[in-house]
Length: 299
Image 1 (cartoon, one colour):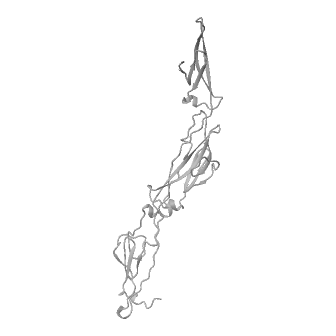
Image 2 (tube, helix red, strand yellow):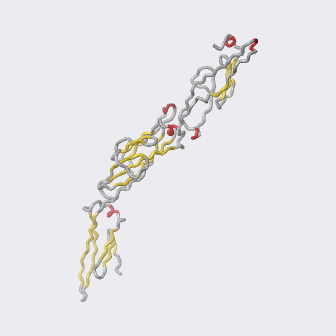
């Protein structure tokens, strides 16, 4: 049996009767770089023939390898976004930009790729919507034909706002299809991971009603109200994501902020209040206060 002879771009086997077979090395980078039938490589082998009388002659066989378009390879992209946080989303987040083609490849020399289609979610392929904002689950992406993209987080989305810190995330997935010069395509996804950022809670003013003691020598009991100041306060960061609220400070009168005096009786103008860390409170009317005693009825 004849043995194969390795050439530059493949292997040939020539039998004693002159029959031959040639196998292209499709793992060869130069072979793979051929893009069309007009792109060629030549693999040359020399052989010697001999007749019955022992006379011989030598010649070459030249195998011309024609190119054929190879599909591009689309590689998934995984950028990161950060939601806006702080008070009323006043602390800016991060909206990622980049190029989806920067990690995509094509073995064909001189071939280049463009984005041919974009779609929200995981799809088998995508068409259209190139250079157009496409709405996903938690934001919108625009991918241009040259691969450049921008993604904007939807900071009004409740699920996005519920994220509390960078360890809590959501994934927004878009599918894009690329095409090469000859029209071959490949499809993959860009997955934007949205990281959380703490949002400032919203404290809502509370109003309650107390009733002074009345009757003879204040013998008719009044009403000292109790309740919880946190009941009407809100925080868009989800309790399910570990968010909690507590009172960190109490002061008498109107102030820009308060610190200390939690779970401690704080004297006001007409009584004293105790507000605990969990928001529960109790207010005691000062029935010895002249202004309180001067009140005549509930009106």
